[in-house]
Length: 87
Figure 1 (tube, rainbow, N blue to C red):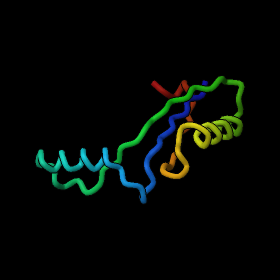
Figure 2 (cartoon, rainbow, N blue to C red; figure 1 turned 120 degrees about the vertical axis):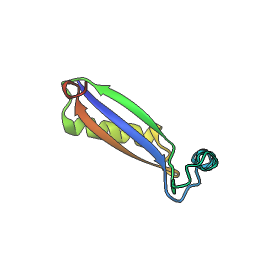
Figure 3 (cartoon, rainbow, N blue to C red; figure 1 turned 30 degrees about the horizontal axis):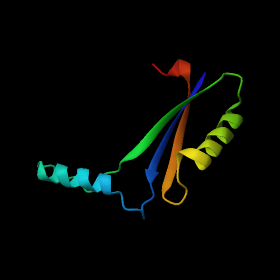
Figure 4 (cartoon, rainbow, N blue to C red; figure 1 turned 120 degrees about the horizontal axis):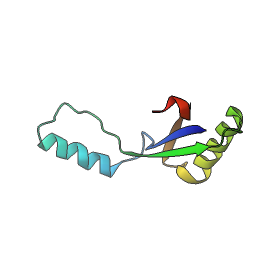
């Protein structure tokens, strides 16, 4: 099996109110050295062994573009690994 972890975050130009609220709360707790904080979503997709690496990449990009990430507001990246390597 192949496992793909997809990470979706807001684009730099988009205000992330949840991240800003957390950053401000951390500042009130004395963690003033944090200059930026990002809040996003993580998805883990498991693919069958018979799919090629190219096919998996194609499907992941299509899934992200169609459902997991809002193109206007978010960026995504992903990591592909064989399940044997994940412990």
